[in-house]
Length: 167
View (cartoon, rainbow, N blue to C red):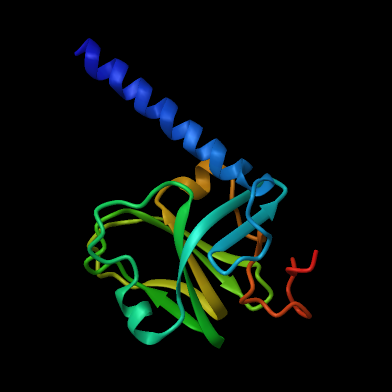
C-alpha cells in the first residue's frame, strides 16, 4: 500500500507539473494565434491549449469519440460558421470532458464541468454560440477558468473579438 501512495503522489506531482507547463507555455516558441492553439485569459490568469479543429460536419460528429485519453494541455475546438444553439453529448466518448461554450466574440458563456463518459444526455450550451472547447474533465475548475473568460484563436473575427489575434 505504501508504494501505491508514493506512486499516486508522483502521478499527482507530474500532473501538476504538466498543468503548470500548459499555463506557462504562452511564453514559449509558438506564435500567437496559430490555428492549432487556443489561448484563454481572465482574472484567474492565462492558459494555452494545443487543439485539433473540428470545423466540418464529419469532424464535429466524430469529436473525441473512442479515445482512451487526451494529454493535459490538449483539446478540441469545434468551430461553427454562424452563431447557433449548441448541444453536445458524450456518445462513445471515453474520457470525462469540460466543455467551454463560446460566443462569436470569443467569450466563454457556459462551462459544463466533467461531462460523464458514454452519457447520451444532451448538454445544452446555450444560444448564439460559435465554438466549443473540449478539455480534460476537471481542468477548468483546477485552472480557475470561468464564465467571461476570453478566448483567442484565428476563428474569431479580429474586428469583433474580445481578445483579437493582433494584440
